[in-house]
Image (cartoon, rainbow, N blue to C red):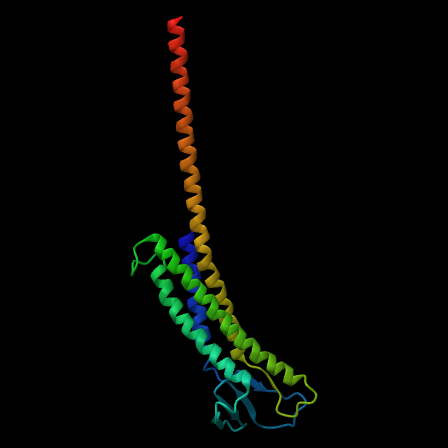
Length: 224
């Protein structure tokens, strides 16, 4: 059971990590809204690295953000969190692969492999939390600007990349939880085995005591 749980958790983490990796370069983190805005033929959309505009003729203009220090704080923080999430996911994938029961790479001791797999699960959870915070923070800023009546700039709506980021984060969190829960499954199996060994030993001891008592009774009868 624990081996199946490890495998499912590892696959979920890999899929989530791949989705997070595709979220970072995605251009549609936020898309301009037509709500309460001047009618225009251009569609504006941005991500953490650039701002883009598409007009009705199909011409696309892309502009990289000029200065890192001129960016809003939340954009800088989201960049860092997403990069950390991807790096943690890569490290976690390597560590978890060494700790899976279905692999014979690196470690041979079962207890050591279990500890390594649980470590990989914690790293996946940490990476999923980093991407979840980044995507949610970015979405919160968009929502606050959209509903702020005093905000005079271009209002944006949530882009497709944010939904991808949420999905990838949830998969990483679920997969990491499955990897860490495989440790509990192993402990339950060991506990059951110990109980079985204890019960068998106790039964053997009781049988021996019964046999000895029977021999004593028999000897007493013969003596009488």
